[in-house]
Length: 155
Image 1 (tube, rainbow, N blue to C red):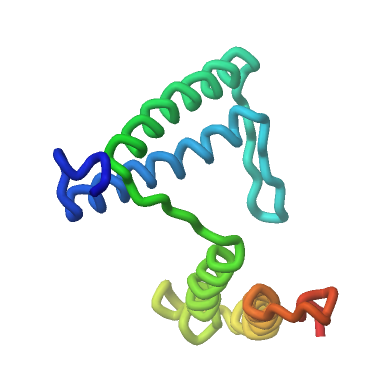
Image 2: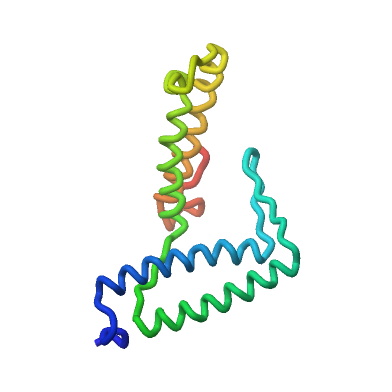
């Protein structure tokens, strides 16, 4: 019998665990901001405009909230959630494959008349993006101990 069985049933435990697990995931992201994280891509950029005092406060508050989460998790024997890098990357790639397909010239007509030059540009540019996303997804799907690259060659 689990320690929390006297006050929570399995369905309640799952519901509480899912919600608090999502909160913990949000806390991980807030913690990254508090640690000064900011990503920079070509079209995407994060701007960490937090002051040092705000960062300290966020890290302290995350620690306090996690303390409460740990108490609840221990008392109610909540299920631990985990997401592997490979699962996350595969999911992201799958989601964006469909979004990229929507940018092909012919499909963009739903947003209005597509200029022939735009259609030509997108029809030339989207396939390499789709191929690259596919390579990334295949890279994290393959696991070969004998291959140091893990099957992650750009070919």
